[in-house]
Image 1 (spheres, rainbow, N blue to C red):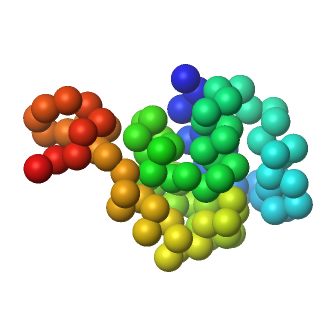
Image 2: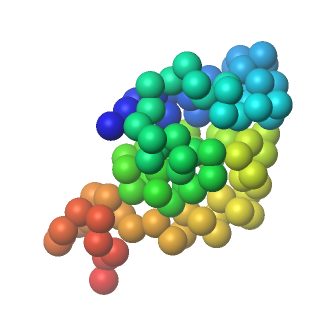
Image 3: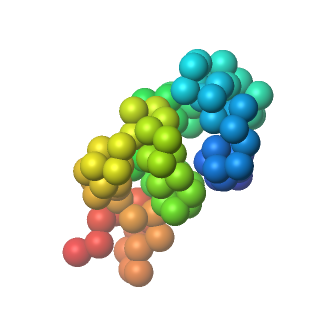
Amino acid sequence: MSIYQINKLCHRTLGDLEFRAAMKRDPSAAIAEFKLAEAERKALLAGDVARLFELGVHPFLLSFLTRYELFGLTTEVYSERIRKARDPWPASGDPGQPRS
């Protein structure tokens, strides 16, 4: 798993204008340099923030992608999708299960 790489990618979108432009032009090519598992790559390209959060990506860093509407993520889309995520760190019970 390469969650650090996705967190790093999200953070990089803020300050690296060339990278951000590349992400808008061709997201798949722009993220090619990052060592991601295939499932992570697919979730990122699909804007599946719920799955990425469940894998351990920080939701605050994921929200950076909405600022520039990368991977089809607007604030509304992000909010809708992240609400469907299961908590990877529940207060009790099994990881990945919704809290009751």
